[in-house]
Image (cartoon, rainbow, N blue to C red; front, top):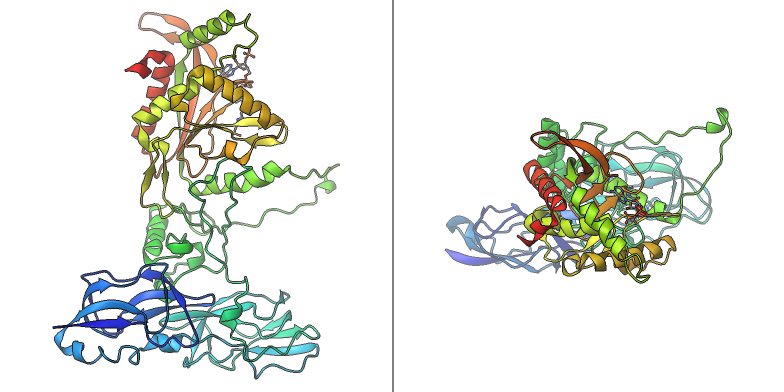
Length: 550
Ligand code: CAO
């Protein structure tokens, strides 16, 4: 038995690549050529195979590390037969990835003079690859393309890469389709080149030029993202160019799964083999709708495959007026959409008997009526206080899922957002550390924040850091509703207008002031029983606030 080092082999023109996936762990028994890690550059991803067989003793890299030829990857206790051979010549023995690493240079052969006219765009020098399969065509006839824009993705056993265009212009004809095998010199498409657009710099490696065409991983909601539209980041859920290693793509293809529909939970939203398995399980169990449905990933992007939005000329039917959406709606819309699509919502309803609480509130306000500086106590302020008690009793409601959906981040602070209606749309100011404030302080702060909200004077920090949100429509009406959870929070409480109802007290129907609570929660985090317990406890506390003291 001897310990051998496994290093990154010759990876061609790539200077430095990022480790995006570890495919083995300490203690694993590996074979020569077995894929160890996946690395990625702007334009290509590849798996780095092992030069040794044996048991992994130590892993020297982690996801996110930058590696280059010669970087030490593993220490392997080589088994007898395999140990001797590969050890010293690790880099030289490098099989596939050495070849897998070409930076596809724009096809110099195809570069004509810088005049306009139809031009063949060919597969450039792709290193040692004899033949690669087209797995994705990223442009269509009629598209205007830029030089170096990615046209197709090709794949071998161990690597995938995007082939860039050698010319700018309009695509006239596609010469390849998904599934075709291509090699250096194969014609990809005919482009009507724009005058002066041709003549690519033959020596420019495309990988270095990396245009924006390769879709980055869908940005997950930042953990600290405020639910309030003004501060919330708008996530890009791109349906294009799924991020997956060649082996995962192959695995997906074998199962007949369209990778572009699989939500990635790996680094940068990358699709892992587990994601594909989960997706298949979801489809089989009916949890994920088949072709036109949306899936519910943990923190990546939802692979939507919906019908296009209907485009209609309404003026055929009557008079119309175009009204641009206000800024807040433009920002909050994508957030609401993401939350609606990605969070499996359940809404639990519960009636709270607030007869005594309302009497107390009205009496307190009446007693303070002569004091012009007195704060008006609102029902919402009491509900905020009661909610904090419920959040303390059921901590999972005061949590967030991490990006991978593997851990719950339990928060030990209680910041309560409340939805405020403003002339420009909905905003969500936040009462920070509500657990440390009295109902009067909360009511005062709410009044100030609501005023600022209506005047459009809220600062981004006023709308950040909520751990739970309350949306009160009590001043307006309605019996109950289904509020949308504000990611990355996991629950939201809706309040409807209280009304007198006959309630059976065991002997007779008594008139009681009842307010319906509508508690929506993320079912990945909260199960139904907890949802019901939380709502029942909250209603109990509102019926008798002394329960908070227990
Ligand atoms: N049942 C019955 N009456 C209620 C009530 C309830 N649940 N909640 C409030 N009221 C009463 C109040 O007591 C007040 O009556 P008085 O003027 O006689 O005292 C009246 O309704 C108006 O209350 P309000 O809504 O102005 O004040 P509030 O403290 O309850 O709420 C705020 C403040 C900012 C939450 C509210 O103004 C608001 O913007 N609500 C809309 C929130 C919203 O749009 N949510 C939807 C989000 S999802 O799209």
